[in-house]
Figure (cartoon, rainbow, N blue to C red):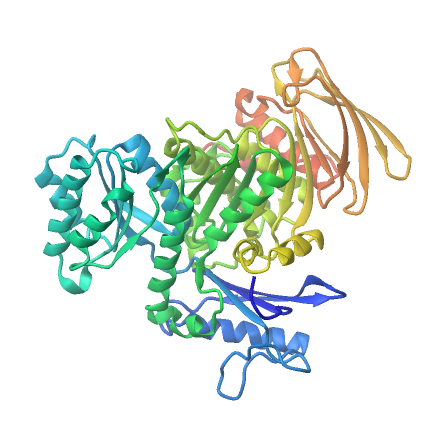
Length: 589
C-alpha cells in the first residue's frame, strides 16, 4: 500500500499495435473506471518512443473528461491537484517490443527446466536454448550452444537447498566460460534460482563478468516456488525497458515501474481461480501476440506466443497452425490462396473488419484454430508435471482481444469459445472489453481494495453462461430438457436436440432458475440432472448439444448447413438459412 492516499490512478498498457489508457478515480467512496482511450503504439520507427502515443491518447481523454494531465513542460502532474489536474498514481504495463532471448540451465528437464519455463512465461522471454544433464551434449557442446545462442538472460536453476553441489558447479563453470567469451557490451544478465548454499560461489564465479541477480531456490520446500524468481525477472524486465529508448520517457513518469502485461493477466487469472474455487482460463487473442493463462488447483500455467495473432501476426499464425486446421472451421472450401491473401491483408490493415460473411467465417476459423493450437502447446509445455492442467474442466473463462470479444453478440462469442475449447459442463464467461486485466493485476500490489471495487463495478463484462452437453447419442434425438423460470416469473420449457444449440436471452441485470435433465448416455459436467440459478449477461445462457456434429459432417453441404444454422441460432436470425451457391464449389473452383 502506498504511504500517500491514492484516489486517481492512470493505467497505461503498451502493446505492439495499440496503447490503451484507463483512468480510475474514487466516486462516491469507491473506485470506478471514469475514462478510457486507445491509440496506435509508437514503438519502432519513426519515433520509437511509446510516450508519443501515450500523449496522444491522454489528449483525447483530457478533451472528453476535462482533466489536465501534463504541465507546461510536458511532465505528468503528480499527485493530483485541485480542479481535476494530474493524477495520484501512474501505473504502466507493456507487451510491446522484441522478446528477451534467454538460455535456461538446470540439472533435470522435468524438474528444473520445466519450472524455469513456467517462471519466464509471463515476462516475454523466449528460450533460445536449454542446457541440462539429460540434453545428450558434451560440456564443449553446451558451451558452444550457450555462446551461439547470444542470450540476453541466463536463468540457472537446479538442486535442493543443501543438496548435491558438484554437478551444479560443473554447469556454473560452463556458464562462466561462456560469458567470458561474449563481448563485454553484449553479455547477458544471470538470474540464479538454484541450490541456495551455492549463492556466494555463484557471485564469486560470475559477478566479475556479468550482472548477477540472486533469487530464492525455485525448488523450495514443499514444491515449486516461483514467487522469488519472478520478482527477480520482474526487476529485470523493468530495468531492461527503462534502459531502452522506447520506454525512457514513460519510465520517468511511472510510479509502478514497467511491468509485463502478461504478468498482470496471470495474477488476475489466479485471483479469479481462488474466488470461484475452480479452474479459470484467460484467453487474450491479440493482433500481434496471444496468451493463455490457466489457473487450476493452486498452480498457474501461462503461454505467450508472438507468432499467433489475428492481425499483425496473422500470416505467421496461418503458417504455424496450418491451412488444414483453419479450413476445418469453414462452411466452404477456401479458394486457392484465399487464406494466404486474407492474412496478408489483415497484417497490412490492422483495423479492418470483415466486409462479408465469407471473410467473417475466415476470421472466426483462424480464431478457433489459433486457440486450439495454443491449448495444444500449453499441454505440451506441462507434460509430466504433477499439476498438469485440464482446460476441458474450466469453471470461468476470461476473454480479451477484439476478435473474440468484439462480435457484438455474446452468444456468438460463447459458441466460438465452445468450439475452441471442447469444454464440458457449466462455464461462466466474462469479457475484458477495456483491456483492464493487466492493469488490475499490477494494481493488486498497490491498492488491492481498488481491484475488488472495480470488479464489483463491472469493469469486466458478464458475457453469460455456456452449458455444454457431453456423450454420444443419435443426431436429432432430444439431448436435454430445460425448464427455465425467468426473474419476472415467466416460465419456458424447451427440448434441445442432439446437434443443436439454443440461446436463452437473460439480461445483464437479471437472473434465471434452471432445471436441466439430460437423456441417458449424455451428461453436463458428469451429471444428468442440474438445478442452477445463473446471472444474466450480454449473451444470456447458451445450451450446446452439438456433441460431434462437426466431426460427423461427411460433406461440405452438411457442414455448411450446420454452421449457418448454429450462427443463426446464436445471433437471433429468424429468416431461413440460405447457403450461397459459391460456397459449395470445389476447392479449385
